[in-house]
Amino acid sequence: MMNGSVIAAIDFASLGDSLFLLVVFILLLLLVKHFAWGPVTKMMNDRANKINEDLDGAATSRAQAEKMAAQRQAELKNSKSEAIQIVNTAKVNGDKRRQEILDAAQSDADSVKAKARADAQRARTEALNSARQDVAQISVDIAEKLIGKELSVSDQKDLIDAYIKGLTSADETR
Image (cartoon, rainbow, N blue to C red; front, top):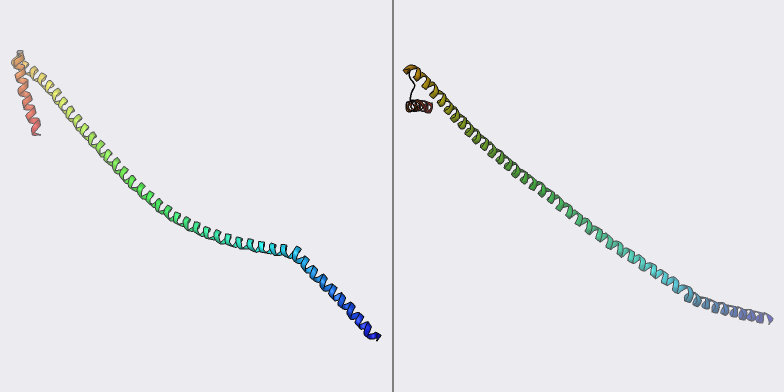
């Protein structure tokens, strides 16, 4: 009998130890749940939320970067077309300016030609007048020597006018 009571005592002691260990284990689980599980779970949720936010932010940043790249590409195309337009405008303005300079040079050349013609005509007229005076004086001197007397003013005038008419008609036939 002793053997049975020892086994019963061991079973009872072992059952008590098992119950004690079970109670202590449940108590430890409750303490861990209360003090450690909540903060660890909260920390893990916070970390998961931060990762999700970072992924969303990266997707947003990538979309913005693609949008900005497309915008820069469009601006580059616009810049190229503006540059071509500026060059074409400068070319047209250069052609206009060149034509204005050519027109001004032609106008200046025409005015120089007209002035030269006027100067030549004036010089010719002055030379003819000078020649007329010289010829008139020479004619009077010759007439005086031939006639042997001094001509009156009216005789000189008639002689000079006749000689000038002869010069003018000879000059016009050339």
